[in-house]
Length: 402
Image (cartoon, rainbow, N blue to C red; front, side, top):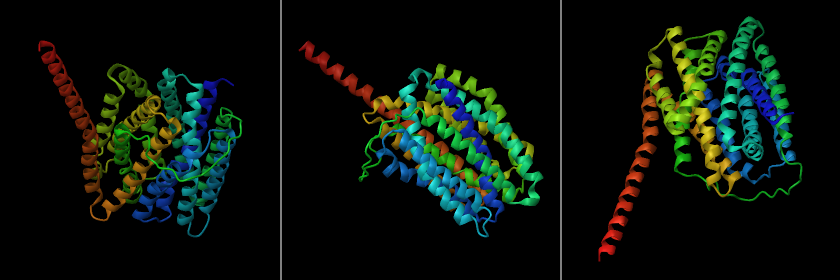
């Protein structure tokens, strides 16, 4: 099988897993009667356990087929337990527990994938592959979300078993994708010695800034679930339309965004996406018109797609600047997941003091400040370097005259 075919098939299968298993998982948790705090916790615990895995476990594991497959098998076990725990009388604690187990194991394969790709893929092809993967994902998520949303509503009489059937299809998809990528991992056996490690060894200012922006994005996720399900009482199909419109618009505009990245630079286009998302959600808590929400979700979907492609490309390009490549990949994912976990917890805390519209407004302002914190520091640093160079040139000129 061609390398590109294997990578794109894995992307297709992993996105099938996302749409069948995760697209409506938090909707399910809300419909099972979860509190606002539990909904925020469902957005926070998985990335926090991903961060713990990356900080103390993943970076110590060698990139081998055995390690990659073992992580995949544990992940599959956790997926199955999550699916069947829905049938229990009080499923939310079990869902959160096995979701956390899944988060620990998923980081083994997700952190090793970039290392595998750097072994097989030319650096010049990273942007193309990530962009194509994103388009494949958008198409599958768009079609799948509409189909699954319609299925869940049509078979709502068998709730929650209708969700279980969908989740089991997601289990099969992720197992098939994991098996494809495992073929790229080296077959040799290497000893595993787990010791205490210091996280954040390869984090620079840009990595922390990307993580801060990620935290701002994550702060919105639980609010959207609460607003759509508990406040507006939207159906599964209506929520699926949000995914569909975001997918259609992203598919059309992502190639344009990639051209703009090549012309104006990765950071500038990334910045437009970050600011665009923040401003679009500023009035969100005041809006009840489904069609207006649909337009906003379409724009946010484009911004999220651009953010994902830009972040992954930046990560792969920055890797060559770091002495310990695998440690850098782990630290990068650690910062991103820590941002996701902390951001979701913060939004849950805000809900205890503010109405939901106030949370949207405060988070939008905070996200804009997060973005400009690095840009202003970067400009100041550039000015300081320029001034220092001018001083050195002036001293050299003075010495030459003397």
